[in-house]
Image (tube, rainbow, N blue to C red; front, side):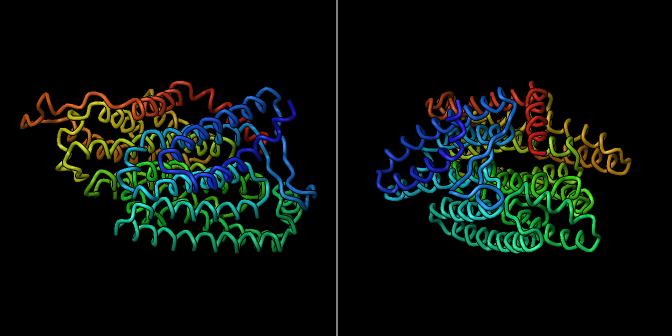
Length: 500
């Protein structure tokens, strides 16, 4: 079974090959190939997860002739394999459920280029998940940024061009800061591989002057990835980026791309710096405060949004705040809650962004709230999926969002700090209340028909299986995370122990 150790590299190489192949295929052929290849990639990642769970061990794959501490490595453990598998579920569902809008929003001659960009993006996502050295992480982080701009601007309307330029400026700023922090850490430690870097930092941290230098380097790096991840107050690019992209792009950008940046940051804290050393840095407290502020202000801005897509986009800023709050709490419980929320938010946000265009389609192609009156009655399937996503965002029991907020509450208890416990509990309560206010308001609007405008002939009760099946899969994953959170949390904790 040792051949499975080659699978992480296979996911990257196959994705790069698929991206190149789609450049020469026609649009429909590129779409069909992409769907099949993503399903195959899901099988590959699932096999890695099975292997790491059954053996109880992680493994590394050395790239090139040089081994650690000089060569580049990929590393696979339970946590990486689980997230890779989860990301491929979201990617495949987004492509399947949103392909009709891809063909209507994008010029036919460029559809194959769109799928080529998606496959190159998948290569970057897989590499960021598997990488065991910081420089490879930076290289694929840049590829992820460029492909993200590509799938955003390919729609070719004025607002997407503006959003892509804004997105590029902010992400280049984040990339520059990340690279500067990386260079400083390399200058201090002499290593780019995470494990040798952590061992060197553990020795250096005994010197207070060197610990200050390490804190500055880590802080610069953290700011860079926080900008790219959308932490408050760097989140203002989100509404246009997610709100005007084609549905598949909005789903992938909000669910996967921002989460990949945050997961890379978690890997650096856990494996590159070491969470014991990181706990000595004030960065942790700053992330906790900014995370809580993001939860509140993101929700307030979502309440003020004028259309449904901007509301969902601003709610993403609030949910990113949850993740950084978990990182700021620290400890195994805090990181576990943060990673669980990465999964819960990803599946929920993809459902919402794949549903809103269907509601708009039966409302005169308008995303404005006033025009969405009774849209869920005209398109019952889309209304149902939006209802499930909304319940999850609010934190209704049985859904992923409730299990996620419960994990944050448990993590707050384990911090042992009364101030942090009160701050986190108040933030959870206030954010949940605000979430309920704007999502329930939206649900009332899309399900109410006081004027009796919906006629029997207006009702679209069924969609093609190409939409229903992936959306039902996303709904099933959401319910699984809500009902069997204990099993997922156990895998996350086992993966974090492998990290250490």
